[in-house]
Length: 445
Image (cartoon, rainbow, N blue to C red; front, side, top):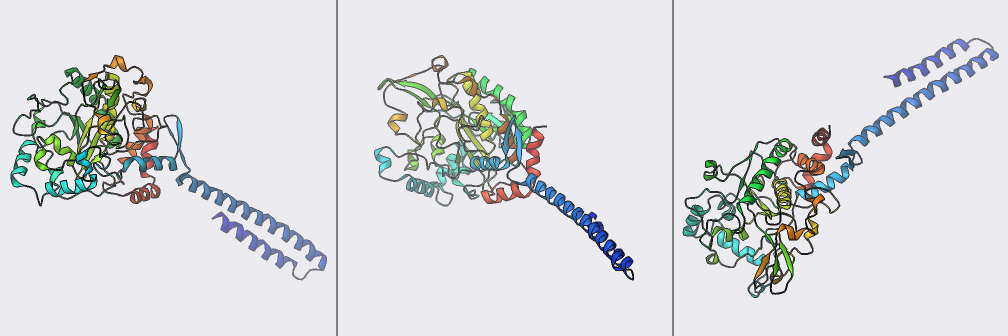
């Protein structure tokens, strides 16, 4: 509007000056010509100043929505570009289930791991499964069977996964079956047979502490389902299962200390070698491992449905190396269970980062090490939390979500981001709208 007024000013004044000078002498005309030029210059300068202001405002607006914009998160500055990079790197996993298993024994050497996976799937898939085995499996573990046979199809690989309905958390495997499961020693299966009851109390208290934060960040109802809750014996059983496992031990055969945070993986060659549903976990095609190539972060995996929404999560926090470590592991478990399988860069102070790296020098995993180093033969002596003081770095054992964790989880649960989206689709949504970024700003208010 102002620009039109300035242009009108120039044209009108020039017309008036020309009209006044008509019919007068040269001196009069010269004086008025100079006045006319002066007024034109003034109007022109006003136009230039206005255009400069418009351009400055335009570039300012562009900067507000560009990847150079900064956000204050937990007292630190993050650019939109940095947040985008971190989000995409942790919310997607390109690793196939059991792809990271390292073949190390004679039997495995006869067949490469991918061929084993293909062969196993051909044996267990819905179109080929032995009806008697299917009946037995559905009776023993009806909650796991859908993710073995995959009758409804597979989720898209390397896409976004998240919960789309209420989230529930339970300890150990669900009681949703028709008989009490016993392990090979004849004892009821509750995590590992060495896990003391007090560890379960630590887990429950930590879960109940974290759940309100998760509910706020996801916008979904979140609840804890106790081991004796009748609902856990129905098809509405808790979908996030915390199964304590792992240990730190000294191997008598070589005197070396080893930690094991990740479950040993070994896809089998035969259906008949399976003695319980736990053995079938190695063949859960479509599962997504937590931080598959890390040594010391919490073990676990996501089981997406065919539409990439999360259907079931299993995580295995170490509970035998002290309460502080157990609580930090449970916290990481719950955050990753929301759909964040990969790890942030080592420099980030966050539950989603490599906070437990102090254990990396003694931690072994079948993804990176030979079997004999992961689980050596001979007697082992298990260490207590008091003997692990050098590894339990107190200022890194987070018992709650950190500011950057909250921002990344909040971004994941932005309504614009849907399960099954690939990286390009996610980036398109995050770069074309401010809706998701306002969620981060709101956290810092």
